[in-house]
Amino acid sequence: MNAQFAQLIVNGIAVGSIIALAAVGLTLINGILRLSNFAHGDFVTLGAYLTLLVNTFGVNIWLSMVVAAIGTVAAMLLSEKLLWSRMRSIRATSTTFIIISIGLALFLRNGIILIWGGSNKTYNLPVTPAMDILGVKVPQNQLLVLFLAVLAIVILHYLLQNTKIGKAMRAVADDLDLARVSGINVDRVVLWTWVIAGTLTSLGGSMYGLLTAVRPNMGWFLILPLFASIILGGIGNPYGAIVAAFIIGIAQEASTLFLGSQYKQGVALLLMILVLLVRPKGLFRSTI
Image: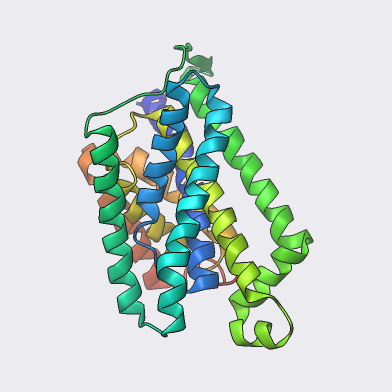
């Protein structure tokens, strides 16, 4: 029982790492662009499939992840150019944004099915034995996922706190109009927001493919934990989203000890509701 629980905690940390990366991208988009992007999960899927595509040609998995990130960022920037910038220019309502994002999610998912089919696929990687750590079997891929997630989070922290673009992003998140009259190039901030969010989102999808099969609906099943993470951690707070993502990832996996795996999504939602009953604004202050 104890060994099984410890195994589930390890699995939860790995899942939490993936949720954290994608949730940070989502909370940056939400906090800076005021966009609740329901297509975000499908951009996670796109990152995994682009990694698979490049890896299929015999390219190293790490280089495949880099190319996939570039492709995912390009797709996000295209959606910004064709959809979101135009909607902001006509001051579309938040409801309109949500409906369009759901349509974009369906477009991406069905496009992936059209190109790659609906069957599960895996990366072309050698099988590596799991490591035995204090009686717990830890696959090397899970350790790798955790390391990459921590590295990405550290780089993001440095970017937000110690660079001019990071400070500009925080200013735009606090008050867009004030940032604009203060001389901040808001269009440049929007561009960098998509670049950072797209890179993290694609990396999350690529790493998810290391832990499980690559399938068209993998990102759709992440969308509830993603939104639960950014709401639980405080909307617009990337650090809060990271903490909440690990809480949700561990809670989801640990719950399978008592409930079936089909209830994992419900656990994320229930946890979010319980915390919001006590702290309506989430665990942390809602700001970048």
